Amino acid sequence: NAGVTQTPKFQVLKTGQSMTLQCAQDMNHNSMYWYRQDPGMGLRLIYYSASEGTTDKGEVPNGYNVSRLNKREFSLRLESAAPSQTSVYFCASSDRGLNTEAFFGQGTRLTVV
Amino acid sequence: GNSVTQMEGPVTLSEEAFLTINCTYTATGYPSLFWYVQYPGEGLQLLLKATKADDKGSNKGFEATYRKETTSFHLEKGSVQVSDSAVYFCALSDHGSSNTGKLIFGQGTTLQVKP
Image 1 (tube, rainbow over the protein chains, first blue to last red):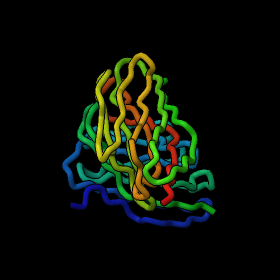
Image 2: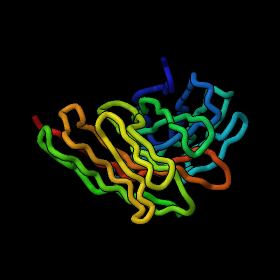
Image 3: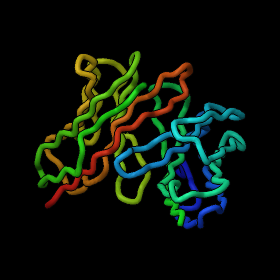
Image 4: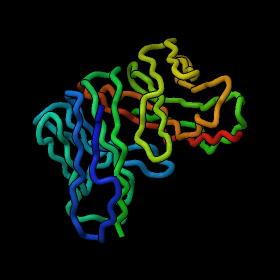
């Protein structure tokens, strides 16, 4: 069972470079999310997609863009990376609803130098 | 706005000790509450949840009770094992205007259990 798959697992970027983090889920979930995890701050929501064809900003969207390519895939793009975007990024998916479990990928550790 | 506050770590315990990790929340309405666990090098996985006041979630010997009167959801385990060493996150579901399933997380508490 693949669940939520993220690529790449590790990445080092220079300031100003761009990159796209890929995420795919095979659980037929409607909702997908991108979070970033920073020490002492827990996980913060960057963007989410409640259903195919829709995306919305979360708590910390600045410097990021997303694409919900289809029901399975939700990508996160950094157009011009900054050192403040050094973080661990997690993709997650869930069925819509307040009580349903979110399933997480293994994370992408991104360092911007 | 909604928020979650966890006790600061790290928490270091000996094997078979009793564990409590405190979690309090601020929310409008009646959110669902969750505990997620992150083992080293892995993503988060659901440990337990509670969806209404006085509900008790339990899994793998861990328990937490949804206390509306104290806005708390403390995690407990009677006897921890070395394999419980991980980072634990308390979270609530953000109602908003639609049921999108967005989660608000606490800052995480690192647990280290020594043999």
